[in-house]
Length: 430
Image 1 (cartoon, helix red, strand yellow):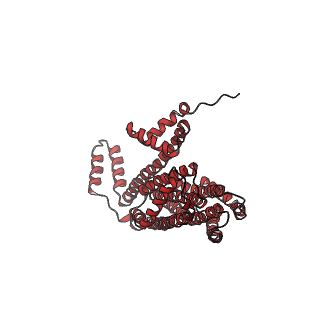
Image 2 (spheres, one colour):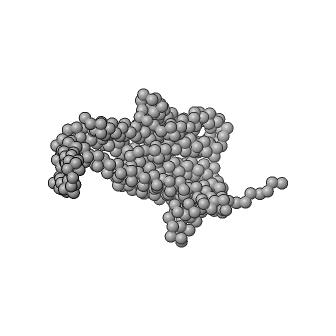
Image 3 (tube, helix red, strand yellow):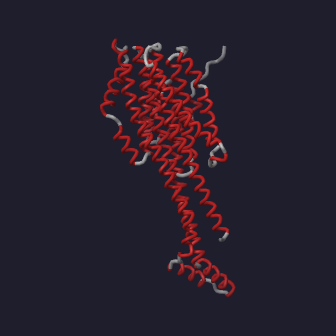
């Protein structure tokens, strides 16, 4: 075996190692998905429990808590595997730090639960803690997508991340509405929060649909219960009105919780499909890579040079006049036309073309992620400079981009370049 062949085989083994690591990360994503779902259910029950002063959902909250602990144990075991150098592929330092941060946030959950059980905290405070914890877990999924090296797996991870993010916003909407309806009051700030959560969900699911497979899109369209969505839409209209809730609103708390839970459970089924789709994709790619590892050794010598390439080599020789150059030309032609060396050259060309295609697709996916980050940063600048809500800032940017025939990313770059000018003036100290 030549040095070039050994290097190509080593590269293919590295590809397999990377894919096996991505498969392990995909399993972590599945565990995180199931644990977040359990946390979301516990958060929803907690919001009603606290809003009712402990009168409602006491037993349901404890049931959700036990479910959550079971999922937490399964997830921790998987994460411990990534932290063990002997039991994982090469994880990025950033991903490992994200996981460590999520586990540190998780370690503080029992103290919050104790405050909840004794009614020493309010619904908003408890919800914020659950939100922060779930946000830290979602960041693990985002970093997994942002550091993946295979374009198709990256797209699958981007799709599942945005779906999980949209589902989390749906869970926050459930908690906010449950507390408001149960207490019989939704003030202006909570109504604004509900509107924001509804609009932000739409953006997340739009991005999910952009990156998802056709099977995942069909599952999303078929699994959403129509009558449940109609009921949620009706209650949303009641909750988001700029008028006080009706006197009967307290009875709607559990109705809201039941309907939004049906919707989120349907989302969980789609999320489970996405996780299995990701695992299946990793298995297929590992099998293909292992097959490619063996094929050159079995079939490399069977390939023959095409007549067209042989003609090109003969033309090269005929261009050389002196004997020494002619001899070198014959040697070159002989090397190139050798079936063994030709198979290696074709293999290297095919590998280079494949890698270039993967690189282009991966760069396109990462470009979409970078543009999303730019838009989010620019939106923050607009919110601060114009005292707008998040949805107002996004609508302003979208309209401006359309009026100026610019992409959202180009507009975001312009806004960030002008951020110092747009920043509100600081008040002089007295």
